[in-house]
Amino acid sequence: MAPKQPSGRTLTEKILGRACGRVVRAGELVEVSVDLVLANDITGPVAFKEFDRLDGAVVADPDRVVLVADHFVPNKDIASAELAKSLREFAAAHGIDKCYEPGRGGVEHALLPEAGLVRPGQVIIGGDSHTCTYGALGAFATGVGSTDVAAAMATGMAWFKVPETVRVTVTGAARPWVGAKDLALAVLARLGVDGANYLSVEYDGEAISALSVEGWLTLCNLGIEMGAKNAIVAPDEKVRDYLAAADLWADLRPDPDASYASSLTIDASAVEPMVALPHLPSNGRAAAAAGDVAIDQVVIGSCTNGRIEDLREAARVLRGRKVHPRVRCIIIPATQKVYLRAAREGLLEAFVEAGAAVSAPTCGPCLGGHMGVLAAGERCVATTNRNFVGRMGHPSSEVYLAGPAVAAASAVAGRVADPREVVGK
Image (cartoon, rainbow, N blue to C red):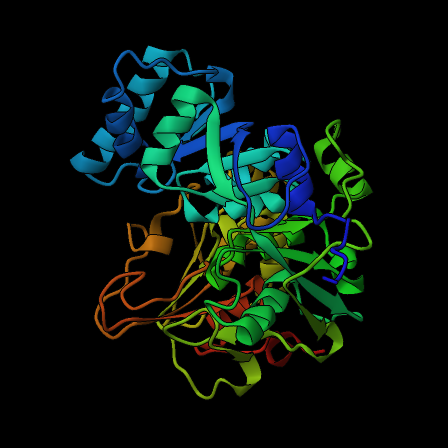
């Protein structure tokens, strides 16, 4: 007799089941109703061309489409200006109100949660791989190709194979200066860049519960770097407070007898402030063990670590200190609201007095677009999410991934540094 299958469901199985109106299990192919479709200034124009190929297509629900110009903004050249223009034109032609540009928006994966557009239990697809960020608010969120974006705009639907789930439990209490980015890099070092291929990564444990919602956003943002289809945390009262009106499935929880493909447990108390060496996000190790790695640039920002808590942490290190004379330190608040809040809290003043440059919200340097592109042989410590060959500029340049504290400490030291050696314990 075959063993009895567990009747419980994971977070992802529950959400996809709601979206297609029945109980679903890992491995099934499902067609689901989509709550939000996202495109940016790189993926949007390609999706619009595919959309226009659909005979007589109209946007099924303009209120469920979000367009964000963030990758090459403020526009750096004529080509990038044309990309942003295409978002405005498509929005105007199809009655899409949620079209965000410089001065009114910011980096998409910080902007949408901040604007209250993400809710627990939603299904969200986006023409950007880091759409998985929204799992921090209890949504099933995943990146898709521009053709799928076009089809979802026209039909309001998308199809998936329901992913199996890997449960990642982070126990204990994190040490001082160890944040969500450090924990994520520790998980990546264990799983590798393909350790969660087409899996849902479901986080739990005491150390996860101790993080803020902004920490969860950082954690889930890096799900795609493990190959995951999505990453997710069960929403709690912090999500209610963050959204002020978490009216959709705010008590979403996995069932006790849910079936998992595998499990991983990490002790947060054993994690040091981390850095991921070139050229993979999984090349994580303690920053103190990185060796004497001289650097040329530091970037603090992006959809991974450009939120107000990240800037506060960087300011704790930089305030009253100076950026090393050999280092360019670029700080990028992720949204207009983050920028304004940082100004009101005196963070921007601390950054400028330390010798850092503060940028308008943009993805710019993360993808080697602009406002921080690296020259041949240069090294950068960045709070971004990828450090592949040539990611931020010249193919011979190097990117070291870290959290805001390690990045800021490195800016002061002129090399990869643990914040404890700059600030003390």
